Image (cartoon, rainbow, N blue to C red; front, side):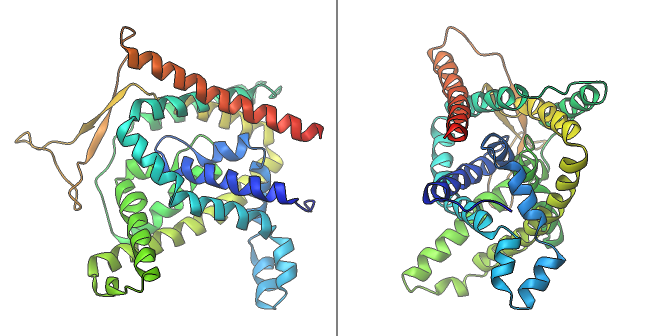
Length: 338
């Protein structure tokens, strides 16, 4: 049982949800890292684990107060509220900066992941003949995923449900970016850009009393896709949480070693100095998806030019990213002392 939360605790939980939502939106960055560094990863996993048969029995029997306490609903509601707000605010700001100042955004996240590796690894004193090999396996898997080629877009509803189950891994597995997985599956734009924008536009129109979207078949199809994706994400979130809860309970050190290795391997995804390579046909023309977007073939990474001013600004933002994580570490220690 978790202790009652103060108003300050509730506020910061929403803020953490904002950061998790923003991190989940950026390919290569994991919302699970935010939970791990923010010090609420285990509570997050264990709370999700409580969404089980017993919880549904309490709910269907009308024991709402017991259901609320059993599932640690206050924690989950505040966190998810922050994530939802993020998807319609912080993540849109991120989209803007990724378009205008892509190098600096990637540099900041690269620094934050470097800082998170230090944050997680500094107190881990359990390297041995079991954790070292598993840490190396996590590292190799992270590197391998970084170099996979993206697929083409697929709006089949069964595949969309599968995308939901897989993509939510970024919230539960630190270092595994759900949005990057969606990019590899070819559905990043469809599910995290077009669908979210369609929902945003629909809410805006409803507030204005405009229900013309009900006659827009393309909008309705996109909203249906979003509903299936959300259902898949919910199923995946609960399923993965039960698995991770078991692993954290019985194999905590090995699981942590894998996470450290995996996060380190995922640095290749957020390497700041890269350019996007788009797919082209035999005629040399760019291949577009059904929405008219260029289909990404891969990322071409390169060594920075140290005579370029932009490069030094990028290093500055890497330091900013590291500083943010060290600041969170300092804040966490201060709260424990108080």
